[in-house]
Figure 1: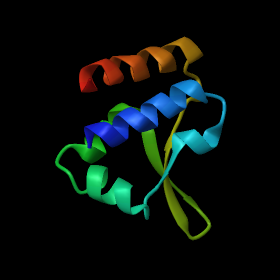
Figure 2 (figure 1 turned 45 degrees about the vertical axis):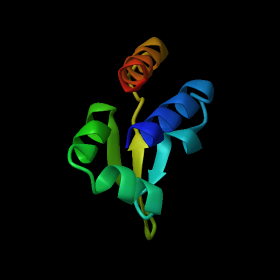
Figure 3 (figure 1 turned 30 degrees about the vertical axis):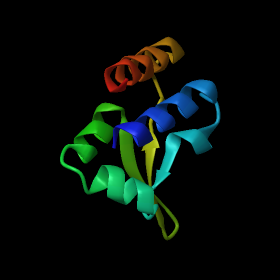
Figure 4 (figure 1 turned 180 degrees about the vertical axis):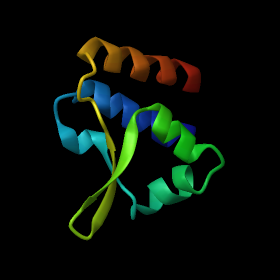
Length: 85
């Protein structure tokens, strides 16, 4: 789980303004196996401000950044990345 979360957060930091990097498809096998099926996986996504949304037939976990300062998002991501190293 740690490697995938690290990669996701790093991609968010590099591409913070692009929503596609803040979206995780619930149907994605890696997301299911390495995050959703693991103990604490949903709690981690929630702590990172990901919420489950429906877009047509597709369900996605989307990092909500509305109302959060850019610096706060960067700080949160960096804090979790430092824990995962």
